[in-house]
Image (cartoon, rainbow, N blue to C red; front, side, top):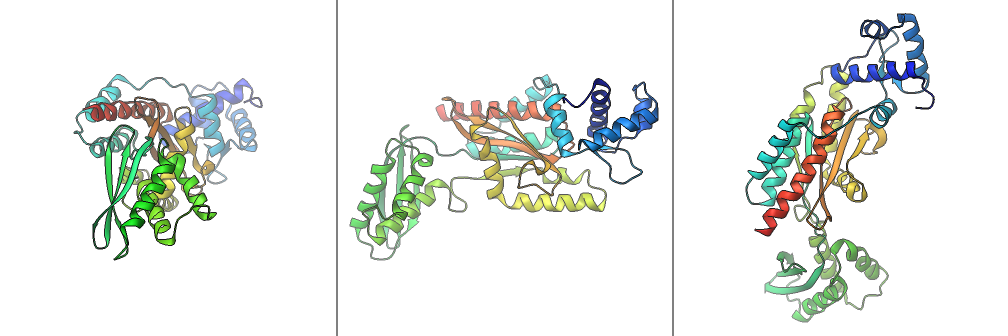
Length: 349
């Protein structure tokens, strides 16, 4: 911003706003007809300076200019004015979330669908993490080859997972593994304790035999979400929206790359989890995130919280870099707040 005088700022702002609206490069003649009181030649000189600064680029020599990822970042940070979502958007978000049913999964799926429809990209929602402190853990034998891993949290909620065990495994091994986990998890969240337990096992400080160690590791995998299909889930709605603006061959290639990213859900979960320590909404434009260096996409994410203001999950939108940031950023933030409220009310019931 310090390198830009008022004339450069005005021209830069109008170029970005026009690009975000149309998706097309902006030429000097368009600007001169749009209220910039300078000759086309003077405008071209300013555009050349902005290009030298890395804020604008051109798809080819004779084309107009469009913002680079750095230019979009400057625009969002320095020029964008954002307020709350419009009344209609707020009403739509609240009505749909409150009518989504009683289960958490239905609320999260509806949130993803809302973001996809209102923002015009693909909606992303991660399921809540298990960040409640643990009260008790034990392994209960069921039949040959299976045991039940039982976890009780500080709120008194009980959840079970089936775990495979070797045939003929003595019950003393189940007791030993359960006691070991209970001693190290009690009063701590799984996120806090899992890394310490794994480090202790890796350093061979744990006084466990091989069978009990294996059971402890598989129990942690089940509860931390490392097992496919368990605990953590990523809900994606609206992939088809990403095809709407894809006309040229290079656009289709970017969409193909983006679809590949969407299939690699673990990476997306990591992006969403990066909001855990963020103060509100986070925005990644193009190559700012290593997951999307070639996809020409932007990701807007925000955490959602429980009644104790603890982050339990995240949601967001992924779409082309020319998203309507002024509308989408507040919408993502508001949806995250509403999801936290709705989930907490359902938990209280």
